[in-house]
Image (tube, rainbow, N blue to C red; front, side, top):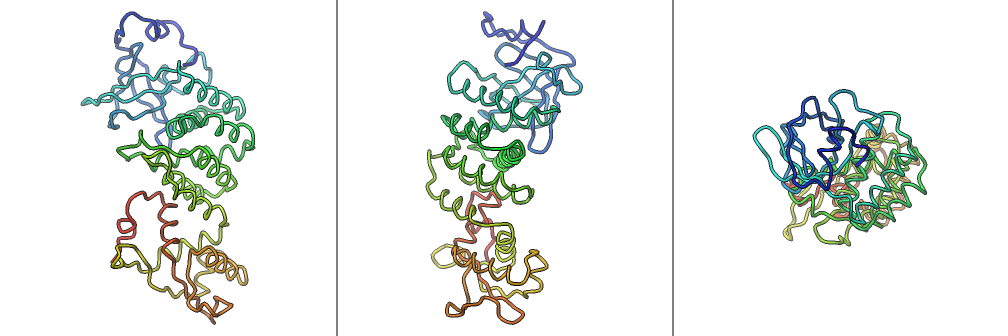
Length: 346
């Protein structure tokens, strides 16, 4: 909590004898909704929680990060706002009731310290950037309990401000992908894997690739403590540059998918005109041949003729996305269900 003043300080005193709810006028809660900062009116507030007027209906137990202040433009002055995490406890006809999460435990203190360090490092000049950083840290604290030190060493130590902004974007996109998950508050990701995703993903400035890295991060979260299979896909995606990812996207999208007798998804051979493939992906000449070879080496596409040293045959290329390639693409899109649901296999 940062700098509560005046009447609000009295309401939010943690040592109050009872949590008296008070109606407030011209007071609002601000949060990041996945694409922008939203403002919602506060109906009442106490030392233990707040009720906000909103059409959103989050699952009970959902953790959200809130900035509370007087209605109007977001305040850059920390003395004029309060920042905290809150947990949804009930949904009403006109809004949602939330309970404040205590910052007294060591785990929460570590993440709060990381948040403050990031704000000092990034020096956000507008509240949108400040709220984005705060929301990203809040999300990471939920999926990586115990990982504040490892994540902090990356975000505050090894990343430039530019890469930090890219990493924050990936985190928020991943949170957005998981937003409708009923078990979102039980999802966990291995801190080492999260660090790997953010370190490699922060190198890209292309928004669509950030979406793909966010998909990898989102699908690396599981109700169990660890999802060992996720590391395989992180390793694979880390070895791909922009053009091979574009080619994989094209072939996984265009190829006809079928459901095998074993219940897995496979693809029928796909014939692409080289000119069309180059036009779609931006790859050229020998580069596209190298990109196709790279995808084949990683087992993401299959060659039509294993004895041929070249994948290019005249004006066409014959490729088939492998089962592994189809799985990777689905994860890049943030799909956590069955492949059959994702590809709508015939």
